[in-house]
Image 1 (cartoon, rainbow, N blue to C red):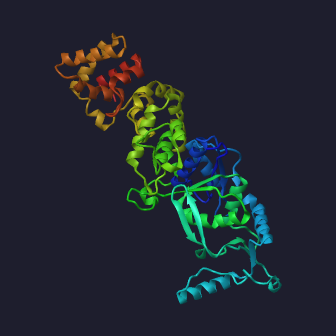
Image 2: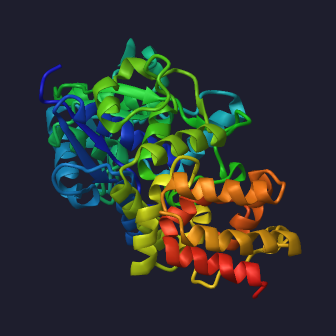
Length: 469
């Protein structure tokens, strides 16, 4: 593959960044990055009524969280309107387009009549071959002079060859009668001007490709490689919607999935490399190819996402994981970490990250080091602190004071006290968890003691043993 691969992600800024759009961006990014090419970003804001700056900001923020960096400046499609109109006029001058004076009312009347008669509603303009001498002095649209016979074949890298009869396509409008260019023309001109070599997008655009190819052919421009990806469906096999849960990318950040885990999961959603499920960015970039994209819709599977997310949390460098947690807290509108909490979390990371599937789960397990002492046990943990267990904790505290504060010594001291009381260590673990964390779900008691240190651990044990609340 040559070094001049150029892909693009071209969302419409009319709402949040959909998870399907995020996957499309990822596929384009992986394909370009794996070939030393460029990944460009274009905001398709030609629908001025529905496009908003807030939506554009949300798209940029979502891509930044997902770690998809783009090359060059963000391109605004609306800003190129004059260039798009110029191309339409150029096609008119070359005879590849023509002036159409049919009004919207006339076109709608034709369609209503065709529907009533059971005929095709495909509009054939009476102005296609009209003598220019008969042209009225009135507003006109510029229409593509599309071939009416033969076929247009989309050589799609995912779908295979898709053939569409030219008699199924009308002479589409390129420039409206008010002088504004249509989206279909703008896409072709922008992709050509930006040097896009591969158009990787959802298969809801497949029909557009045939029309866009006709514009390329009329202009004598090279047609990019098309790759139309099947859409993402919900677990029930139906088109993804809000009833399936999270649809916008930002919702996944607020739910506490790390960006690396999200990239991995989205890459596997409709693309595969053998049986590999969990992989790094470096591997994804090296392996990703259009041939690995399936033709069937992918299904959203939260269990698989949880599993992949948990493995990425476990693999992540502690400092990177801390940054991810701080970004999550900000996105979720939660309080930021204090310096003390940050320090404690850094020390505890080794015993937290192996069993957490999401960042909120990790933070729950970190309660023992994040909570402000004195620790108040929750209802479940408090049940472990009865009179008998408090008595055992009272015996254990002086034994621990003399321990060297290594795991072996701490375990030996705890086991000796349990044995002296005729119970197994398991009977002591519940009260220790309640005293140290105030929770029943937390890291091992010895890990917590090592993280908290001698003074804080002994203070918590003494408080629990005395029955203070």
